Amino acid sequence: MMDAPQVPTLFERLGGIFGIAHIIDVLGDRLYDNDTLNRNPAVMRLHNEKGRPGFKFTLIAWMIEQTGGPKVYPGADMRTAHANMTVSDFEFDVVLMEAAGVLTYCGVPQQEHKDLMAVLESVRDDVRAGSKGA
Ligand code: HEM
Image (cartoon, rainbow, N blue to C red; front, side, top):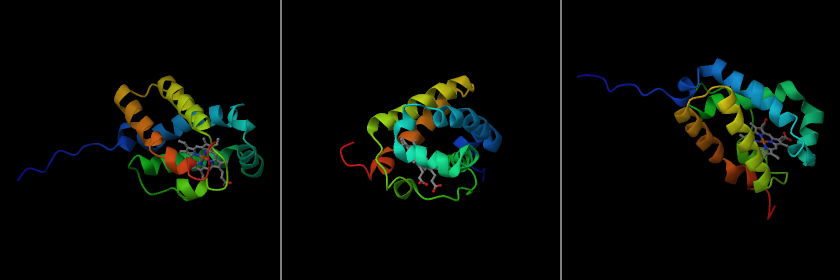
């Protein structure tokens, strides 16, 4: 019997570890230097205590895992990670807007763009779970 054709994961379609590292190298800077997000005291605390390289590393590892790549993310789940801070819907939208711009900047094709934006949107409720009415 013929094996069913293998559907490549989003991880593979984005170019694997190197494709994702490239996206986050650009997106990580855009988020780290974003004056709107940096008005949130929790974000400034993260920057001051942990710094840019670790910020990028955790995002790269998270995205590798979430897109179907190897299990390399060492951090907390999104609900736990954002539990002790206020994250507004507007701030979440700012992250999505920056992501959308960077995906076009990095030449990510339309289908992969759509699929990765859906992955990001899927964690909105968990990221915002600790925020009441923000
Ligand atoms: C798609 C949206 C988002 C994703 C995928 C995401 C992803 C992550 C990841 C992977 C971590 C690391 C957790 C760990 O190391 O255990 C983290 C931590 C953090 N995120 Fe997000 N995040 C998102 C949205 C936001 C937004 C909108 C804000 C605030 C404006 C925010 C603020 C923070 C802060 C302050 C931390 C540090 C928590 C700590 O260790 O004290 N995140 N996020």
